[in-house]
Amino acid sequence: MGQRTSTSPLLPTAHTSSFPMDEELGCTEATSFYDGWTECANVLRERDMDNINAMSEELDAFLEFSGIFSAVITLFVSQSAASLQPDTAQLTLDVLLAISQQLADPRGTSTAPAPAPAPISALPRFESAPFDIVLNALLNAGLLCSLIASGMSLWVKQWLREHPLDEPAPSRPRVRARVRVRAFRRGGLRAWRMRAIVACISILLQLSVLLFSAGVVMLAHKMNETLAWVLLGLNAGWWAVTWGAALCPTVWAGSPFRSPLSRAAFRAAYHVRRAAGCVGLGRRLGLGLGCGFGFGREWDVGRFRTLEERELAVTGRKPERDRLELEALGFANRELWGSGRLRVINDCFREVGDRRMALERIEEILMAHYGMKERRDAPNDEDKPEEARSGLWTRTCDNVVEQLRGTMDEGVKQLMRIWCEIFESGGAKLNFKDKKEAEAARETHRLFEAALKDGAHETPAATVREGCQEDIVDEKLKAGITILESVRRF
Image (spheres, rainbow, N blue to C red):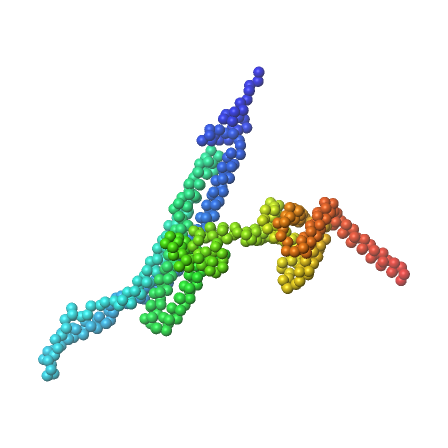
């Protein structure tokens, strides 16, 4: 009798002996088990490295700025520090004057009694002016904030550098341990608020600039009042722009001026509105600024906890949701035309809520691909009567189909099929403006179906090229025959 081969997954076999023993499961079965955990660990690492690289680049910018800024502040500090110290020249003059009075001969020729010489210890004590104290306090505070920001940037860069190091080796026996370590470290970044620390460094540098600018204005005031007013106006304009950019994301959801300062202002507005709502002062304080500007409830100041929550609420409402989805699909078709990735992406057209907008977007993609005029981008389209716009749409669709019948590729075919499926399943959800637009859509549907049917029996590209070459050869032969006949007649 032959020896039976064990098929137990817990025992090594001939085809699995090359795999190392798993330290947790105790098996060596050659499955996709390891590949799945390895892919999971790689995804975690890639995501962490993206965040780490972004924060590291920001910290590099902080270090460069703080280094240059600290050097500039040091020049002003060294100049203003003299106002906190006594004038050595004047002090020397006072001492010499007192000594000369003490050494003067009391038996002078003057009939008036000579005044008693003042002792050197009786000279007035030096005291700094309050203006100079405030000036130096502002400049030194700005310098200190800049240096603290530099030190914090160095610390955080060291922390980020150590984060991806010393993890378990990417070997099969310890692949699950590597996943756990990556998840554990990722949770540590969130729990210890690493992004908040980086944001604090940015705010600290902005505070340093504010203190320095105030000190420069005061220093200019000592030199010349007109110069001080000029610098004050420039500083006021700069800080108005800075705070305006920081507050724009708090009021307008689409503002791209996001920064750590704007996030802090947004959170502050949220807590202020929440506290005011507890005591019934929300309407008195006018915290619903969004409604006052006509932005709707999603734009109310302080209604959402984070910018991301407000963004999800704004982009998730109709019709903005459908418009943004179709805009993203249109961008993907412009950037990836001819790529196999569009086969999966274009299926998303079927899931768009507004079917009529989806049909229009697909038509625009096809027209743009073939260099035709898009209906929505036609010049002075709004000034034309409804009959002209409807005729332009139908006429343009006819031109599209005529070109597609002989030159369709897989991307065009897929878009045309999706268009027909959306039109056939849309029904009342298409919401055409009038009968003329509905009739134009039906005409487009008929033309697309005809193009798809003809496309099933289209001539291969090689055959078309051969036919074109044969036509060129025939034309050359005809031209040659004509020349020969002319020569014979001559």
